[in-house]
Amino acid sequence: MKLKTFTSGIFENNPVMKQVLGLCPALAVTTSAINGIAMGLATTAVLIGSNTVVSLVNNLIPTKVRIPSYIVIIASFVTVVDLVMNAYVHDLHKVLGLFIPLIVVNCVVLGRAESFASKNGLLESLTDAFGTGFGFTLALFVLGAVREVLGNGSVMGFDLFGSGFKPSIVMILPPGAFIALGFLMVGYKYLDERKRVKRGGV
Amino acid sequence: MKDSPFKMVLVLTIITTISALILAFVYAGTKDQIAEAYRQDFLKGLKVVLPGFENAPDTEFKEMKGYKVYIGKKGGEVFGYAVRAVSPKGYSGDIAVLVGVDTKGDILGIQILKHAETPGLGNKIEFKEWRDTFVGLDKSDNIAVKKDNGIIDEFSGATISPRAVCEAVNTGLDILSRFTVGGEK
Amino acid sequence: MELFLIFVGAVFVNNLVLARFLGICPFFGVSKKVDTAIGMSLAVTFVMAVAGIITWIVQYAVLDKFGLQFLQTIVFILVIASLVQFVEMVIEKTSPDLYQSLGIFLPLITTNCAILGAAIINIQSGFGFVEMLVFTMGSALGFGLALVLFAGIRERIDLSDIPYYFRGMPIAFITAGILALAFMGFSGLV
View 1: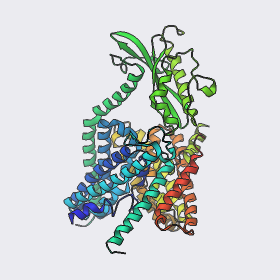
View 2: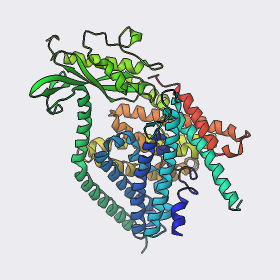
View 3: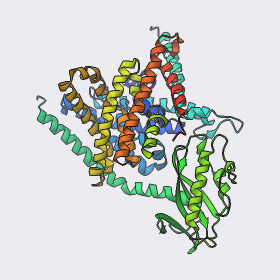
View 4: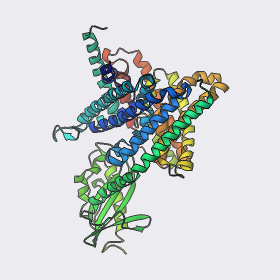
């Protein structure tokens, strides 16, 4: 049961690939694998914080002001992450820039608070935050890695092919983000269906 | 308990107040570190254009026509000056360049502080090999891209970004020439 | 001239959706039909303009004055959320017709990062009041343009025979990529 909560966010209900949420940061910062991981971890940190608090205080919040309350809670965690990153990992903060405050409106975070943490206990909500965060980070890492390999000929900053390789620059430009994610989704859909067929489902 | 409007306002107020308090606390705790990070960032740039300074050039500067001219010292002696110059002619927006010269007016190094040029094309202005082609040049050299009959390499497919950098470098040299020997006084 | 450049830049060159990756969720979510795309664009334009004005004033009259810049994120999102709620209530009371056509989009707008994104860009770029207005209108128009164009293309895609695994979102993304590629032709204009 617990394990299911954790793993579901990674593949089956991957926030990016399956639920198609949190796309803005997923597309914008994934020009390299390391940026993808950084954005994923920042989002995970916010998710863990907001899921924890929401699951704890949920009973005290009247239904009508639920969403605004959640937004305030999320925005606080985002600001904390923003300040801490600016202070201690300044270079990464510079790269991710605008997209750190925008974690506030990342539908993944609000979505988990609203649909999971508000209905479950602390432990379950934490597990869910870790699972979803990991899935999100994984998706961003893969997308970043694919774009970095094709667009720059390197992965995590290491040169892969030597100087003979002509990278297709378009992959690290905006259009490449859409195209790479499109093809990754084709692959995801294929794997997903294969998995389901194997299990004997439809 | 019913959800009365009073309770709704109360809950929201409490949440917002707690958030603001926590944030004020975190902000106070990280403020100095953030300022220091920005300073280190700028010092990193200064290290490129005033190699080997032993003072703190970011706090030792003279104002000149609204520009700050940073002074580099080694063993108590002034050995170079640096200035931040901006060209608005980048492919996408301003390009800010830090230019450093020695006391004779020869370029010690340049560093790109800010740009939004296309990755893979215009952003090659960040590369050390390219920036190093400026080292040793001075105001009398024809600092412009080869397409404009200058001596600086442009990149295939990207002339605008290097051209803007050249413009910024020339602006910087103009300011700095007031400090260096042999320049106009 | 300056203002014109900001406007053209916001509509075409740094298109909110296709170059800056803001407002991607509604871009894919409500672009199946041209009609809904137009409705969404109008709602976004309105909220973005009002939110831009209020956040700009709040930033300079309150946050900067009292050294509270670190509260920017939380204050801006609160302004946007309450604004959306307010607009929804007003439209519902005054114009049921408009509510019918725009109402369903309004709740979605709170979590549309284009609104918050544009508000923050306004501040980061140090725009004055008029520049801010021009940039906001340009951004909103750019968003609408991309959304409506994309919806038009998707209506066509629905009629075509697409390989099984590409159906739905994957082909939509690849199409958006090609659209973004086309928009890159505008870069260097400003």
